Length: 100
Image 1: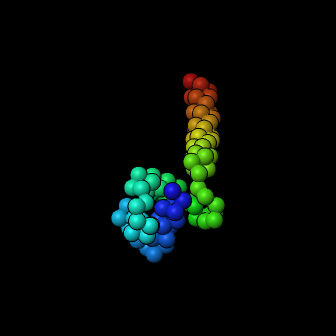
Image 2: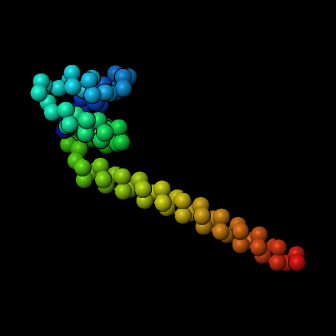
Image 3: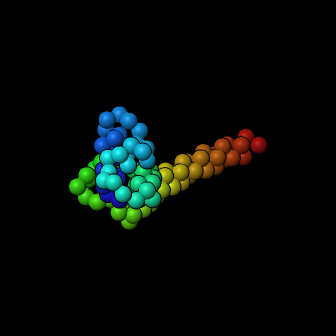
């Protein structure tokens, strides 16, 4: 699968959008189509993983770790915004109580 991901990278670097046909053309004959499709999905979801370490094979665990980190960052940012909104609402409630 790493070969197919590298092929997708090479295609993308030329300015083209990698497709099953383009990737298949760069690989040896008989390369399994399900692996090409899987590699394209991994590449589309996480192109930076393989770009940052081209000599290091991309594993499902690496993809999942990266995805987990991104999700955690998004959750942290969302919680921070919610906490800020809560603080503002509490402040507004206090102002309304004082004006009553």
